[in-house]
Length: 97
Image 1: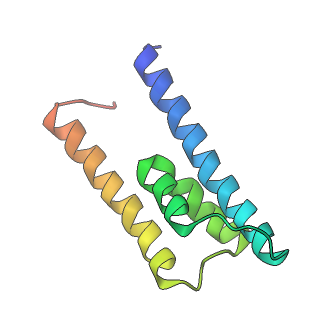
Image 2: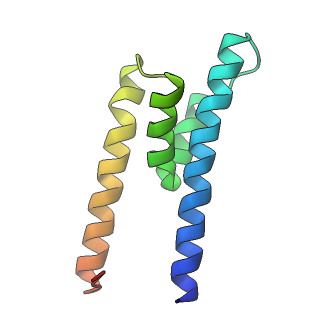
């Protein structure tokens, strides 16, 4: 298997796991009135590739689902990432099949 693919897959797994865990930690801290993870940090992790994990974390932990900027922002980030990936593959004529 190509080393680049292994690195990309590893990064994607780790950053999405981080997004998921951060949503869970922030929800726990919110319930216990503890120090919170800044919303900018939650969005940053989503923007750098953790949008799927963040969205799943939002649903699993029922966290930030009533905030419109999370409810619509996270899926918008994911949609933009999908579009960019498709354009990248198309521009460089890369086939996944």
